[in-house]
Amino acid sequence: MAETATTYQDLGYDKIFVSLDGSEQQDKVLDRAIVMAANDNAELYVGYVIDSTALEAAGTFPVDIVPSLEKTFRDSIAAKVAAAEANPDIKKVEVIVRSGRIRETLKDEMLDVIEPDLVICGARGLSSIKYAILGSISTFLTRNTECDTLIVK
Image 1 (cartoon, rainbow, N blue to C red):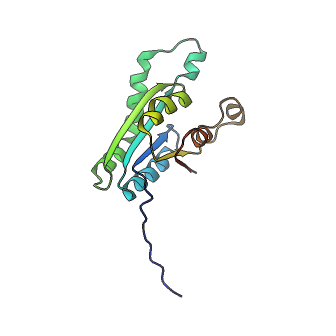
Image 2: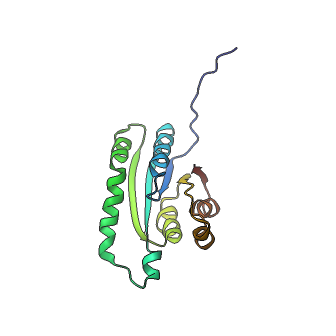
Image 3: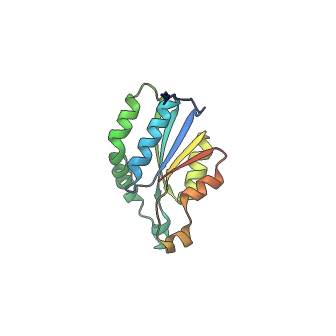
């Protein structure tokens, strides 16, 4: 039986955008994005949208809650971001947090600005009712980006 050597191929990704959602799967998705950014010596952009939809439906949007939610998110990924920043194979690491409607904010304020070569996201399972109303963010990203999309399960 012949031995096979593992070879790494630069896939040509210079800007990798990872969309996180605060779910339990978030660490796995971020880990995958960090490895891919290091393998391609790419820039890594970590995006998170604080969903305003539920608050808007209630008729109010308490702006003072946003900094607290942002801090909680940043704290949840701080160790992984620090490791990525320390990795000499990753050109740049930037964490971007915005509040708004998830799809529009991702597209208009993140993807259209960064213009990544690859988008990575998780395949978070929504209940069937939420899926029927909201659809899937991963499906939205796949359909509305002009670059490759990796959905981590």
